[in-house]
Structure formats: structure tokens, C-alpha cells
Image 1 (tube, rainbow, N blue to C red):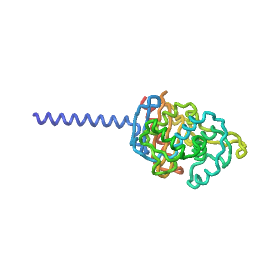
Image 2: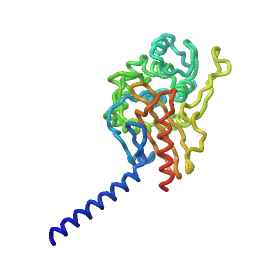
Image 3: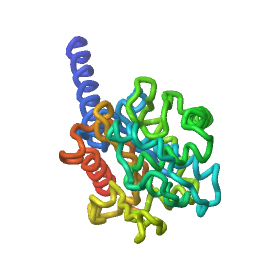
Image 4: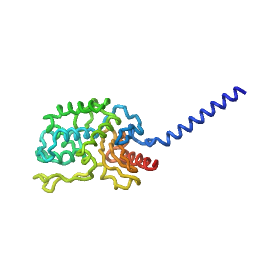
Length: 289
């Protein structure tokens, strides 16, 4: 009889654990996402709501540019300041096939133009120009990037460039990038740039009508993807090493969330699985109201 009761107790415990497991899987909004690494935060409190391999070091691709833009904003409050894009930055970027906003060597634009150029179309030439403006060289600017990362507690992050081009010593994690984005969104200028869908630069000799730019995230959305909310803005990224990446901000049922995903399969020419992951996660949040 005692043996029967012990077996019954074990079965009850096992059944309870299975129920808890099923409930956990249903609650985990990151379940079945394609990205290798992911983290979801409450944007206001920073509380982690779900995560997947979020602390593992990996290539951050162009999500690096969030740090570049934030530091430039903090260092240069005059957004109308004129900056000439150095001609010598272009050959190396073109060799690396870095993403470009479309500014020309020697073109003079504003700091504001460079901020939008770095964030919306992911222009590497804008990042290089901002780095030189702030620190005189990209190398010196990278030191500031790593200093800021340490201040924010980004323990699994180390930068070697301002653009996110692949380097074995250039890495971050989904958790660290979420910390960066939450801090950056407290800056009004950063938030404005991050959530802008399209922008036209100031008029120059090279661009007499200005240079039109569109967000690599928002240009792929129609605003109706999340019934109870909206994806407000984001920064995409891709390299062969990093896969498809995305850091985004959304409001769902009146509450703001930050989602960072890294290492989704595909490339610029395939389905954008990073964006598909974000839509899926935010839709699941809407259903949990």
C-alpha cells in the first residue's frame, strides 16, 4: 500500500511539472522565433520578460550604430552644425561593401543629416563622419564607445569600429544591446531619430533636392501588423557573421516594449526573418492582454 501511495505521489508531481512546463511554453513569447538570440524588455522598467541565449557574445552588425548615434548626440548638441564627409573614408567602406546612406565624398551636410543617415538607411559613411567629428578619429571614438558600454554595464560587449563591420573582437549580446537601447531612448533626440520612418537631408550641391532616406525597418511595415499596438521604430542589421538582427521598440496594449533579436537566418535578399520574429512576438503580447 505504501509503495502504491509513493508511486501515486510521484505521478502527481510529474503531472504537475508537465502542466507547469506547458504553461511556461505558452507564456514564452519567444518560442519558435528564428533568431538564435533574443530578449524582450519592459521599456520603462527594464524588466526582462523573456530571453533566449541573451547573454551569449555574438556579432552585433549594424546594431552597433545605436551606440555611435547616441554618443554623437551626447557630444554634439548643435544638430545644424556643418560637417564635411572625408573623402578618405569611402574606399575602405566600399571595399567592405558596407551599407551606405548615399552621401558623396566631400559633401557638406548637417549633424542631423548624419544621425538620420546612420540610423535609417544604416549609412556607414555617416558613422565614420560622426566618429571623426566627435573624437578626431574612429580609433579614439571606439574608446568612447567601450567606455560608454562599461558605464551602462554592458559586460559582454567590446567594440572595434563605429559601423558594426565584422571583426572577431567586435561583439555584443542581445541583453547588452537591450540595455543600450533602453538608455538611449531616454534621450529625446535619439528617440526621435529611432522612431522616424523617412527623412530628407538638407540641400547640397551634390543633392540639390536633398537625399531621401527611409527606415530599413518601418519601410517594410504598413503599421497594421500588431492589432493592439504598433512597432514604433527600430534598427536592423546584417552581416554574414551576425545574420539578420533587429532592435525595436513597440507599444502593445498601451505599454512599450523593447525587443532585440540576433542571428536570424537569411540575408538582405531573403525573407526578413528578423522582422518576422518581431511581428510574431508583439502579436503574442497583444493576445496576452
